[in-house]
Length: 222
Image (cartoon, rainbow, N blue to C red; front, side):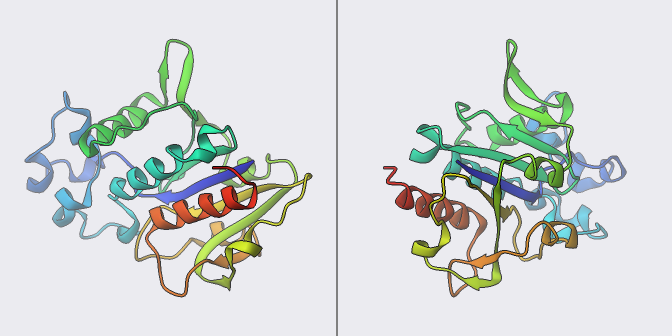
C-alpha cells in the first residue's frame, strides 16, 4: 500500500477579514460554493499581508494532484490511500472511488462545501472524510511506515531505489501541495528520509504522478 499525503495545501475558505475587499466582493456569493474558496488568481490583491502567502489560495495545485492520484491504475487496483492536509491544519481522507471533477470551478465548489460541511458524503458513505487526528498522528497510524518526504533538497533517488519491496512495510509519501515554498519545520520533523526524484524542481502534480508510477513499476501494477 502506498499512502500519499498532500501537505500544506492552499485550500481554505476566504477569511472573514478580507471579505469586504473589492477583489473578493466582486465574485463572492453565499449561494455559490466555488466563490467562497480563497483563490490567489482572483484574490491576489486582497492577500497582500497574509502569513504564508506563497502557500495560500492555490486550490488548483490540489486539483491537479488529486486528478493524477485518484485516476491512477494504483488507485483503481486498491493499492493507494490519499490524504489532503491543508495550510490551516485540517486533514481529510479521500474515498478511492470518488470521481474528482475535471472542471476547476466545480472542484472549487466541492472543496468549499467540504470545508463548510466538514466532509462530503452520499447517504451514509463518506467520499471525503474529515479526520480528527493530527497529520503526525495519522501518519504514525500506518503500520510499519517507511516515511519519505519528497523535496528538491533531498537525496537524489532513482526509481529503482525508491521503493524497496518488503512485506512488512507500508510507504508514506509526503508531498507538498504548494509552489515556491518550503515545508514547515513540523512537516520536516516527520522523517529523516528526504528524497529527490529529479535534478530540477518539479511541480507538485508531477511529483505525485512520478511517486505513483514508480510504485506501480516496483510492484508490477499496470
